[in-house]
Image (tube, rainbow, N blue to C red; front, side):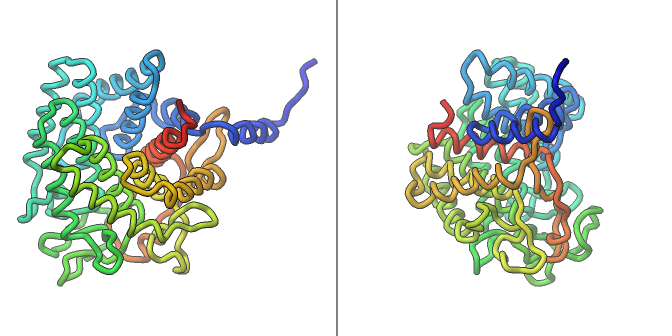
Length: 381
């Protein structure tokens, strides 16, 4: 007769075993098998972030283990082929999967598809300063845009070796940086509107642009996380010999200096409104924590940031995320404390965002940070 083992006991044993090993692969398995199978991939920005993490796992894996990630990306791009486009930044985001397949396989159909997305990108509405609009129906600059474009543009550079793609990325970083940087903190507010005429996107709060500055005034954590990750990825892509290295390095160092002091030392997390940790109603949020920690970890890998100073910070993040921002589900893990998709708003809007679990950007940011941290510390061979 078999002994009955309570599910709670099994879950406890799972967590104990996990404490001695990586949680990265466990989260990736849950993402692929439970959150979104490749056959159900949706052409959108959150899913694109998860796809990007699988692409990083592909490159970090041995030849015999790469097939899992390659087949996921290949299938995901196949099932979304009819809706694939680059007509706004959130659509451009997923196209890095196509450019990746073009680079790995050399297949002309992927190359042609990637070039078509690039043509779409060139036709996205722009502000007078050249900034790509986050919305197709009106001209608004959002901090999210920088990362959504970066995934595709950096992959196109890897595919072609043509530095015009890096130039595009740096141009977009510069114009967004000019319009969105908060002078007091050095971090970015969420949005800027070209004309301050409110456009109802069904998501942002009404009349969010200030009539004088054309901006909202909230420093939202995940929005800044997108910026840090984009800079880190751009630096890793171009390398030190590139003429673009210095301005990108300056941007990343500035970003880390601005965001690092706001880490909550007891949990390793950052807050939803990152510069206001003592604000009543503010809460610790996991996806921004993973994103900030990813940018800092990459900075150390690239020998831009002092390891003695910053390694303790990302160690606290890695342990803190495992302790309070993930839960076991059967034999894998799910990211928790993830603030849902967020448009532009005022203070109460951001404080009112619900915490959930999973999401493409939740899985993706956890995997990318955890992988980078394990590579930096030698925990992943």
